[in-house]
View 1 (cartoon, rainbow, N blue to C red):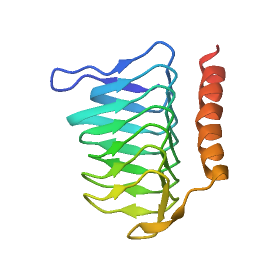
View 2 (tube, helix red, strand yellow):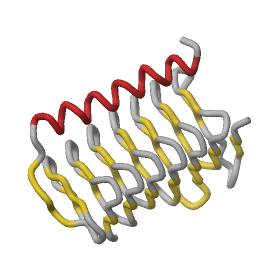
View 3 (cartoon, helix red, strand yellow):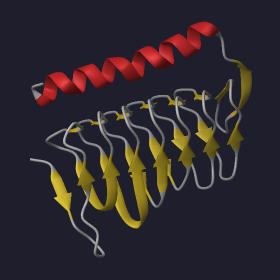
Length: 166
């Protein structure tokens, strides 16, 4: 059973077309937009800043978000990512086990590689792949990267529909 818990005068808001896994925890000031998918073991703790998950975005298994996170539309956040007090613009991507820290902006169409550590205040420009610990610019994105990012977001929207039973 998932945990949907009010805190600080806020109750999580979940669009009827979104899907939240049974073992996810949504606490306080959290909003999940249409078509979004919140997968198993995810914790969205909006007790000291709101968390917004945009349309058709997905937060994959065991990821954690806290303290003022804005996730735009059509975004995939990979398994076990830690996303804290930052902004992910539309059509961006965060890989598995990545850490995105306070004040970071991942611009539209930018990619954070699996395992990357994006330190506070960094800005990942559109069209770039950042990787490493700490993360740094690796290369410009290719057409195949953009295709994979779009395909991932679309795949998870469809998978969430199946889980929701629609």
